[in-house]
Length: 114
Image (cartoon, rainbow, N blue to C red; front, side):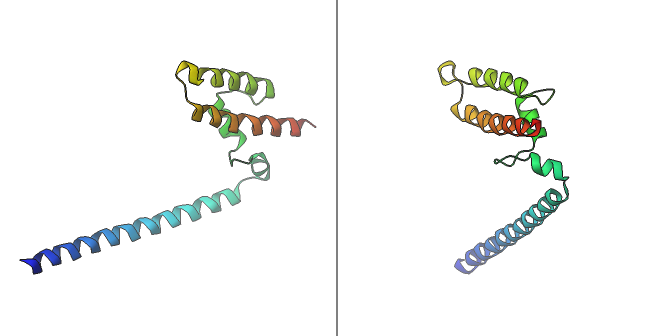
């Protein structure tokens, strides 16, 4: 009985180990492919990336702006910040994420204007 139990445990550990190794290989391959894809992006999109690693297009989607202008970004940022205020049941975490998107995007757009 103990022999069979030990065999079952060993077999289970092998199955889990193989699955983990396969998942790890897949993750490394996906990471490598993503890094290669980032390397192939245009120079302008690489310049548009801010410190948090987001492109201006991603910032545009997150802040829900139709055109990239500092005024519209600021307006939507202020709205999202107020809606997610802790005093109205919002989330400080979301407020910080909006801030991390809006500030570098606005700064990048202002640098392009000069």
